[in-house]
Image (cartoon, rainbow, N blue to C red; front, side, top):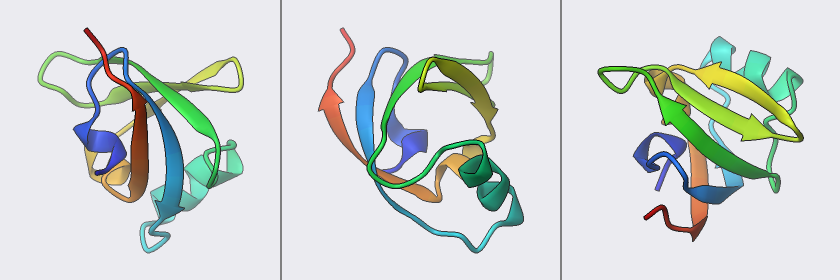
Length: 78
């Protein structure tokens, strides 16, 4: 499962990251690294970009880049 598969309200742990996309490296510099807990807060109309919360901050992530982050869902929305 990847970050792109989550729905708003889901909480997940980042398990691994494919760093082949330079945009993914930028997100890692902002703190999106392995073993952190993220909260998918919202999606834009059409589903792209995603608003991801972690460490008290929010970051917009394009769906294409979100597919590079493998996650384990901890809680399910709904």
